[in-house]
Length: 230
Ligand SMILES: Nc1ncnc2c1ncn2[C@@H]1O[C@H](COP(=O)(O)OP(=O)(O)OP(=O)(O)O)[C@@H](O)[C@H]1O
Image (cartoon, rainbow, N blue to C red; front, side):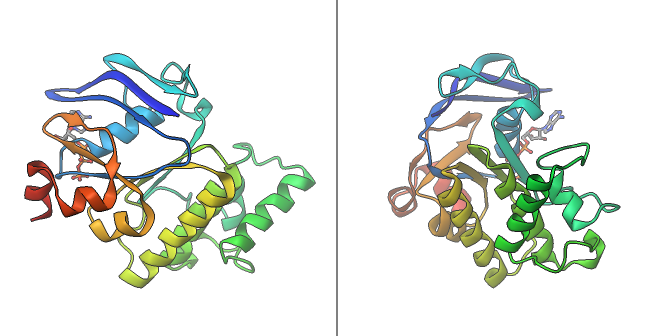
């Protein structure tokens, strides 16, 4: 279980509070108005944003005291997932060894992750030679390879067209099934939440609320979500 226990996150004049738990294997859409603190919340779990007080726990062990790289998670952003000067193979391989000194079995695992995400034959290309969908796949190949128990997605597919985005959401679902990962995905699109997520975590008015079932929340949204969805 991922738990944010009485956490208070303060960035300048911005303040966000969270006291909530996310069940193992849950797929949670993080939704709420622009500027409400969705990225801040994800950043606090990932370790990019410090806590003012409270704790983040995974399996009842504190992780907020760990450096980002030591936390049991992978994170995917809309940009900056791939290094432009490295091949697709090396970009994915960074997921297992930041120094890129891979043993044969690790190289085989990279090739398998590339194959599973539909990138066979493209491993020697640089990110600049890939389509948007292929770039997303490469980011997901790294997530698959790392097989960390928590996957954080900060709108990685926002720039993709609807059909491609659905493909990527289904690929995330497959990766989560395969690895048993817990998924937190920031999205502005209720359709994304419906496709991938059983729960929605609403961030609004300075509070990250405990996740609630997707369909029930969308059918009868609280005022903050209703105003946001329009
Ligand atoms: N480094 C910072 N210092 C001070 N304030 C910050 C910093 N980073 C973000 N903020 C502020 O924190 C608030 C939350 O930002 P955040 O990016 O988490 O919102 P969001 O819900 O992810 O928004 P969006 O949907 O627009 O991406 C905003 O008011 C933002 O201006």
